[in-house]
Image (cartoon, rainbow, N blue to C red; front, side):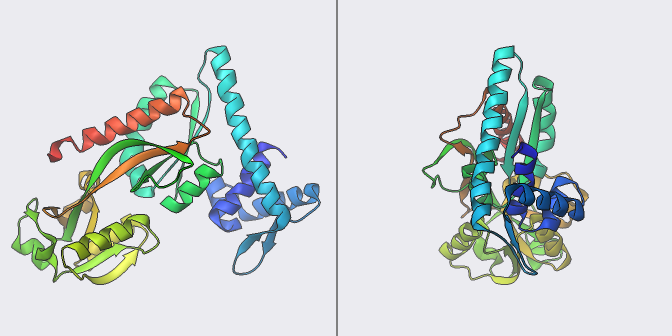
Length: 305
């Protein structure tokens, strides 16, 4: 097994299909399928059970995947050790984060990071929190941006900041026409509005549902989605309201002009962490990236107080 073979198989496991995996690897699906067949021929056993509805690992596939994750971990550790010996910082840093955080934090942070570490390659992968945790524990990621509770004993958590929950409202809503944008309101004041909320499978969906329940609001939910950009488009087009992180308000895009925004008197704050496996401490350049992301987030939200 070589590292390229490991990356191909793990991509299929991560994405759940050959088509999605090929897209993430920037190759065609037939090319990926051919390469996986070659790997299976070399192994002497199928790795995947293929069906029209799902891709599943065979018993040999489970063994292969565990070994593939260990190989990628060893490769990373070797590159880091060689870089330390030579006095250069070279290697690969695999970072996981939710898609909306990637848009908000990565571009400027990476520009600053590459000024210091031009020979370190960042592989940024976006996924839901449960998948990010699984990839961390499986050795597919070195670090990931997580929110909520420090609830996995196998992970180390470093606090970045606390993110405030705010309300976005289409300017066509009764709320936006009644109360000026930028005001502080209670969630009870939008109890009659229609909501678009995060899909149930998202970790922060439960936090938003609990926040609404605590103030006695039973929302009229028109739609749930796991795509934050899609949620904003639906909110604007259908005259809805939505809960979102404070940092969303800082998005300098024309789309944000369609919304009124409100801070909440009954809001909650969600801690953001950089997490990594306890048995794989952060390298110096990974620690630098963490510090840059933390500083960037705090700078972007400094004026909210």
